[in-house]
Length: 259
Image 1: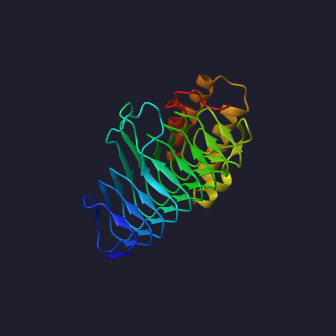
Image 2 (image 1 turned 60 degrees about the horizontal axis):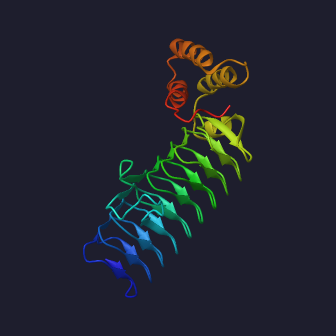
Image 3 (image 1 turned 90 degrees about the vertical axis):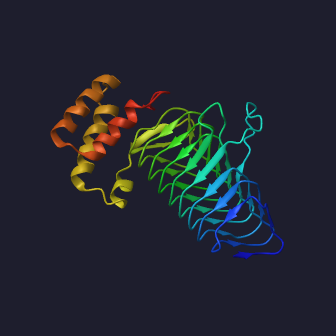
């Protein structure tokens, strides 16, 4: 185990022997770090927190700290982090609250750029990018392959579906369906994330179906129920999994989708 002599490690922590911990790091009580992960310097980890394999955490990041939410009273809530994530300088990730499930959960292969923030009780999937100063409030759900632009904020309890995209300095207060691009303050829909779909090797047939579905929801002046009915007809004919993801991201909305 490679731990710099200036770092402070709580005796209850569980750290794999392959983990590298640089200078001036603080590892608190009930922290587990699995193999291959690296803490470069000046990192604070608090628990109960589990850090998966091959994560890299840069200087001045604080991961697993208490939430400043006023309803939090010091309960032993959790943070669970998957594998192969990168947390750049000054990133902050807070644990959950007992008023929700008590867990903040982050998947794998995510990039959190400098000073981005994940609040209490959030769920973040896989292969996402949080640009500099992007911040999501409590109870937010981010799907997979999502891009959250720099200086973008997401309101409590909002959802961003798979492959959605938020441009720089966007203020999101409603749910964003899968594959949809938004921008501006307040957020407005600016199109389908077809570039993101191509970059993720989604086939042209699926992209074509998604363009039809997007037009039904956003361009035909249909009520949401009417649009969903027609999109489901498209799905019944094609059985396309991406179209199914799009439909599901609309149907699970509780705050209402941005239109």
